[in-house]
Amino acid sequence: MAATHTTLAKSGPMPPPARTLAQRLRAGDQVAHGITLAAAASILLITALLVFELYINSTESRAKFGWSFLITQTWDPVADEYGALPFIYGTLVSSALALLIGVPLGVGAAIFLAELAPPKISDALTFLIELLAAVPSVIYGLLGIFVLVPILRVAEPSIRALLGWTPLFQGPFYGVSLFSAGVVLSVMIVPFIISISREVIRAVPADQREAALALGATPWEATWDVVVPYAKSGILGSIFLALARSLGETMAVTMVIGNDPKIKASLFAPGYSIAAVVANEFTEATGQMYTSALIELGLVLFALTIIINGLARALVATGSMGGKA
Amino acid sequence: MTSLHTLRRKMVNAIMLSLTGLCTLAVAGTLVFILGYLFVHGAKDLSLDFFTKLPTPVGETGGGMANAIVGSAKLLLIAMLVGVPIGFLGGVYLAEFGGTTFSFVVRYVTDLLNGVPSIVIGIFAYTLIVLPQKHFSTIAGGLALGVMMIPIAVRSSEEFLRAVPSSLREGAMALGASRTRAILTVVIPAAKNGIMTGIMLNLARVAGETAPLLFTSFSNRFWSPGWDQPTAALPVMIFTYAISPYEDWHQQAWAAGFVLLMLVLGVNIVARMLLVQRKHVAR
Image 1: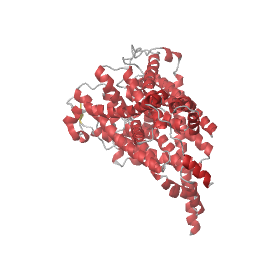
Image 2: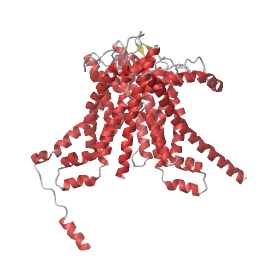
Image 3: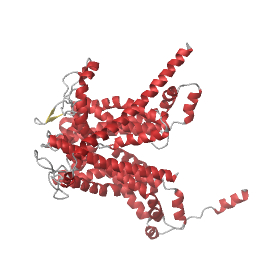
Image 4: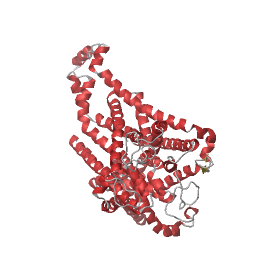
């Protein structure tokens, strides 16, 4: 044994014969490496160019309004005065509402699919739910206008009876509103929360839940007090991913939010989101300053989603502990 | 006392577990409802005219969206020409040549690009092409969709190439093939089906994108006269028709929504089934 070992160590692997550049070029390795490297580098280039174009083309607006752009409520194309606050407010509130509805539903369903349902049923349901994520957002908008809004008009009196005492559900309800936008968004983000959360819950080692059960915990206690805390950062990551998606969601929101750039306390009032105002007004923007302000809104949205996405990826990465998210 | 406590725990257990079941039911029910509603409302107004005729002016019934269907196909073709080569070659780099800090940066930026809202990508294509050209164009819309395809194309190509066992690579190289030859003749053919399926899913995803087209390829009531001219696209037509005040336009929007959804879901179902089959074979 030892003899073989030394012989092997002595002879060692033969160093590859030195090849000239021409030989290596003929073999194609350098060329292939170069071509694929160029493709990879072009992704960096495209992303950098995207940031650059947004920054350069919003120069006028940034120069005129400065940071107060973010906290100004006026949006007046006639007077050429622009502020982003109503849109930032609408974007954040509709997304917050979407999370409020979507997170309990999504995490609940993920727990059911990962812990309780038989694997075959779980896989079939997950397949269906992931199809929901493939439905184009304009179709959610279509359903929002013609199905959800009429339903909400019918449901409005009961919502008001239940929650009407809060300032959040005051004032007239036209159907299109921040509330409708939040509901549509919640339907759109639930599939993301479910499919990622189910994976991270499934990745929790079986001995964790078995140990809890052996100590006398009920299945629910084992799930809620042991498995879910173990998978916490992954679930949190899925929620942040969903948030980033709902912040940038355009068509479905544009079609049901009401498109009114005012900040009202009531969720029943129409609102506006960053993505929606860009979608609606970009082609109509006549002046330089108008276009520039809309592009700056795009820059704000970009920054917002980048921050949330970065947080989400970090959380999902730590949640799966070196495994693939 | 203890038995009461146990009873309470058992009740909490039963209630919470059924609640999670209800959550699942609610979500799955929503999907069934969406599909059912679109079937009933969309299929009803679908006729051959929808695929062969141009949109009619307001008030005139009938007509179709032939120009939008062709427009969408043209946009997807450009998107594929932009997104697939960059995405695929980038994926080959990450799977076969990468492994250093640079690969980490590329992966990170790719994820970042994937998170950029589609409307922002639209602004990007607008500033790149529409602004200098001073008019809307099919190419700008296709470019926007193409940029959206890149991140997913990179990651799915990388994943499928990595799934090829390294013994295949080593075998080819042991027979004297260069690294490139091994990749071209052994690794890529082995990963081909997966990569193609990834591209199909990717195309289905951008086929439904509306926001980046609104101010790039814009829209057109007629046949688009050329690649550098505005064109109609199916998702944009759904949007404009849905928010219009006309009843027969709403009907057309439903029909278009039905066609688009069938296309997207059809591709998704077929592609996912192929992927699942392949996984079983590999095991």
